[in-house]
Length: 321
Ligand code: PBG
Image (cartoon, rainbow, N blue to C red):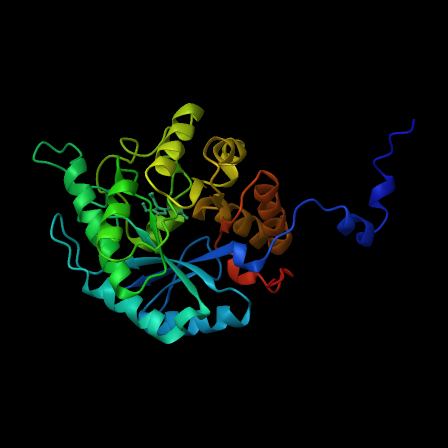
């Protein structure tokens, strides 16, 4: 028997030499929640050392994260005032502006662009009088949000709403407003998933009626998921994404092959909570479990990973370059 898989596993030096996947701390993106109505930072059930912050506490968190080599953030902004059509974006604008003024280019700041934290009904879109999705109105609102965030100084836009044509509409609006160099990281293949629970708690964005199956992808369908990402690529997305990440491993390489664009994976709140809660019950070690899950997404072809554990970068031994 000549085929010995044991031979190259003798010790960690040899195993490291033969490791096919490794990555840099900048390939991990840390979500951060900032709410207008929060006074003391608020726990998010299942998400360990992730909190909903007020603006001042978020500064302290980011300072701390920077010390731990974590400097790539995805921002979720939660205004206290909800609406159905005219969105006042002052809180969002002020927050982005203050963060970028303070941290300058020491951080890369992506902002999620969606309506679910801003609407009275908690959906990612606007409706017409008959309660059907009004795609046109939704796109207008989304592009207004994207321009406002760009004007406030955000580094990158991440649309997560799943309306038809949002990427081209947002790209066009950004370009028309002198933001042609702001990249779009599109949530291109996003499923209507059961694993967004802790997030919705944090982002105050649970739909007050129905669910998101009218606009997010059906997890039974691979072809729709490929088509959705292909379309985002054609509409001008710079980066694509699958979500939930660990539950979409089969799509990562095919999307890259199809579009030629880099594909990231979002380890969503429910996926992260699964590992975190198991570790709290001593069923596994948190850091090792995260490390494994991230490498598995990398192995599947993910270029970058959005994860609630990105701030553990240094602790887990990721290098800066
Ligand atoms: C907003 C949005 C959601 C997530 C990211 N952006 C929730 C949803 O679509 O219902 C989920 C992220 C997570 O669970 O970590 N549309």
